[in-house]
Amino acid sequence: MILTSQQLKELYNHLADPKGRIARDVKNGKLFPLVKGIYETDPNAFAPYLAQFIYGPSYISFDYALQYYALIPENIYNTITCATYNKKKIKKYENKFGTFVYRDVPKAVYSLGVMAINTGSYSYQIATAEKAICDKLYTISPMKTLQDLIKLLYEDLRIDEDKFNELNKQDLLHLAPLYRSTNLKLFERLIKGEK
Image (tube, rainbow, N blue to C red; front, side, top):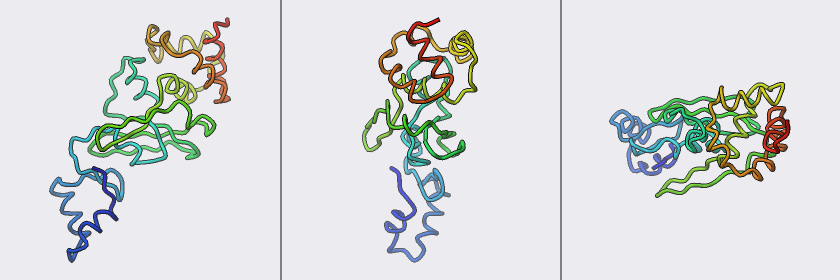
């Protein structure tokens, strides 16, 4: 369960030193700091559940989502990659649960192609496979040609062609132009089957 410093102070308000109790609970392994002022009580909490509490608003995307959908072969369970907007710089946090990396996507696409997942007392947001690949391409230096983009997808990123061909082309064609990015313009041409 996620608890803030304020919630803990209220929980311990009958004690003479609530802040001291919080510090002891951290030392004794009853509370696990995520970032300053936010704690998790479960030492085995699944890292994606925690990402939006560490920095937000955010949703899981990029490499973590691509491997979640088996579009890339990498196993990056210890690094949770998330999308934000208007933050202007990449943020990185490390704690007991893993490494959490946050980077911007355009505000115009931020809320599109994102699903809410509810599991027990936790909920988190993750990009669809289509959104995750668009987000990823947005963060990469611009390719010059369609052939460069194809090489990037299948050789550098090692996107699984079979999984790629299962993606919803209409969703990709809806999302890609909204990024206003060279890579996504090339990607739109690829989806349309242009040379």
